[in-house]
Length: 472
View 1 (tube, helix red, strand yellow):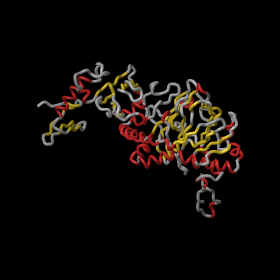
View 2 (cartoon, helix red, strand yellow):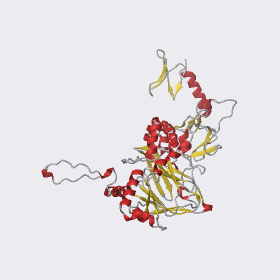
View 3 (cartoon, one colour):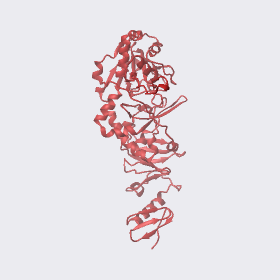
View 4 (cartoon, rainbow, N blue to C red):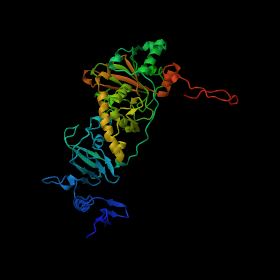
């Protein structure tokens, strides 16, 4: 009988076990339908081979699903099944299986990413896990084009373009940090807590100052009232907490709506819960926002205890915890000559890292076959986490007035604000950051928090000299 050929190698038939083998490559295929499968593949490759010049960017018209549709729809380097909303998109040069929701989340068109700030308009948790694809295409420069059918965000057939270069990006290493103790709070419990203090008493450095700093450590959030209407008041206030941390935004910065904003915070749009500057290795610890003007309608600030959110999530959805601990989210900022990129897991120790607007469009899980499966689990988990974060019972809302200043732990507290109407007035906050080391130093000096405990002295012999405490 004729000897079939697969991958250019002749096969020999072994009657005892029904195996076709190509000994040089160690290829073995079990089962009685090898010849039928081989003929189907040969027919498919002849008709839809990407090595030919024929156009495969559109679905072949027919009365029913073609062989390509029933099996894999191929367009040059990419393959998927158009009849399965959960079918991954396979990038054949590296054999990468990319989850559809991950790829949709990575779209950088102007409808999905604000062109002036470069920040996403939706969260990963908003992307459905099942996504219909109308067809695939390839641009002249070799970029992949995906035509999403009835898109969840735009409502129409949405076209996303992905340069082939993104599949070769190497992500940076993750960041790890130690944990501290705290008092968990919800909206109702925070209303009864002494989180409001006087600016004058705080600056005096007496008992009121110590109580306010203790509350900042325990709750991660305090408010000061009675600040002067000076743009430098926030700098004087920051000096009582630690050393100001200068970033590419400057030592201080203005939160107010402006055209062509380099940050979504500098618009009048709704700003969901997030933490600042997660794309930096040294994330600022304390954030201060001094209200200089707020006469417009809307613009209420709201805050969420990230430690309580993580704790609630662990209790409510224990089966979804591991994906959020294992998966590394790549945060980035690439505007104004600045390029920052850092990996962080959503659940870290007792708290969260959460900042959807600054997620990179290209995530590491897109780049490995193992990561594609992990992304699917992460996506299901982060959707559950969003339910926890959006629980109104956990969010404390407060509309700041001139003279108010909010001070919060940026590594613990998630913050956001309502949209506001600039035609009805102005909203102007002056902000700055305090770095972690100087803040922890101030707490130790005030004997606040667990880090005031000194390590035990090291046992030594008399000839070793005096005992020196180990550094904190």
